[in-house]
Image 1 (tube, rainbow over the protein chains, first blue to last red):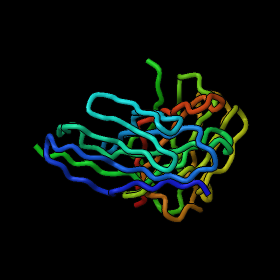
Image 2: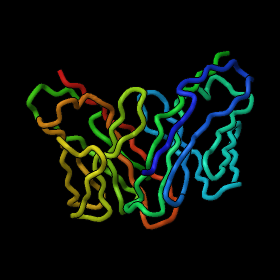
Image 3: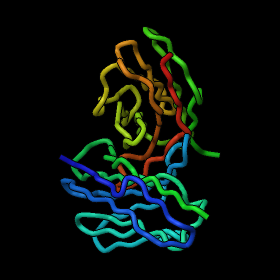
Image 4: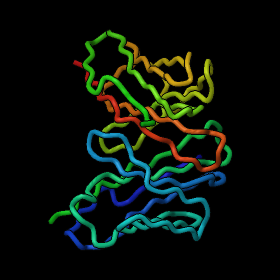
Length: 112
Length: 114
């Protein structure tokens, strides 16, 4: 069964304190791994897609990496505006209809 | 501007009522999805549709119904059979045939049972 687990559930950082969020997955053939940012009361906003182990993508203070079993979202020198819930999702080669399997999310809080 | 709209933003339901949540997209996407989000949990798939006049159950379809009469629209009805409908509902769309293409999400509807 395809499954996604994110850790930690919540993370509190001081402004400028770099850290990483983890997304562990099991999937019967990875078609893509997705990272989203979600602000309270809003819909998720797409950040990155990773397709194969070893791939890395960057956007401002965020960098996503992928191995065969997990993905990391590295946050370098975070600012308070980076506070949000970060969601990880996978798409399996074998499931139809472009369905995504989501983890439960990591709630990030960055204090000034 | 292209995007996904959901309405209403907030919805209140009395016990025993059916309510319908609207989702419209002008992205020309073939596939549309409905998710439910509860506090501290990830998104769970309710229903999805890959083409007009066709849709499939997701993981938690009981107590919900959908229709797909137009490519742009995918309304979700929460029926009285759904015992715990209070949640945040999200609609999404994408091109399902392209490998690894992301889903785009609407702003969500928060449903509260009174």
